[in-house]
Length: 252
Image (cartoon, rainbow, N blue to C red):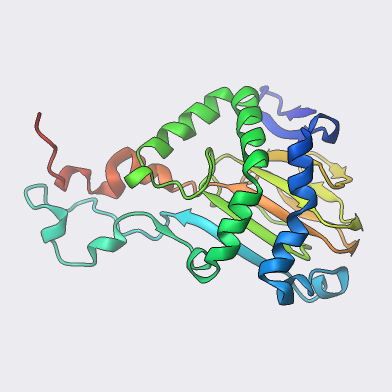
């Protein structure tokens, strides 16, 4: 199911659970068990009672938003020879990648089929956006992407109940995949006047920085996997965060 604006721009996609391949359904069903294996204390707080006081989120992401920019730097000096921390001029990973490496690897491995499925669906649903973003990913240093394309970040929420918000830092579409045994917890998209009953195996993609969204109270144990990309990464892809003019080009 697809929702568009008056100009035909796709705003929201809801992927039917009836079309999910069996391997994807199995991965989503096993997510709570994966979390229990690595962070049992956190998972124990994933019910609706705990969510009233806040929820826990693991951020496994690659960022560029705080990188030192080189606009105005002299072009006749290599940026390594300029004062400052040269390691802050490129992309970096979130602290949770370093703090919970086993959990990160377990989730990435445990969602391989799901990532492939979402990747293929987005390639079909939004080909122009998909191709444009993939071009950015190809330029990241050392193949840079810590996740499967087309995203550079995965956020895992436990006991999630959010206030109304927009994700200004997201690059175009994000994908949300709820999991766990729960009731209610509907997703609300304010501008579209939609209240979406979200059950397990529902996957949806939407323009999270343009649409105000939140979820209602739920009963049971609820989590969600959010796949997204930092919108400032294109700054590195386009001109190396403003340092491109200071870098030596390789000669043939």
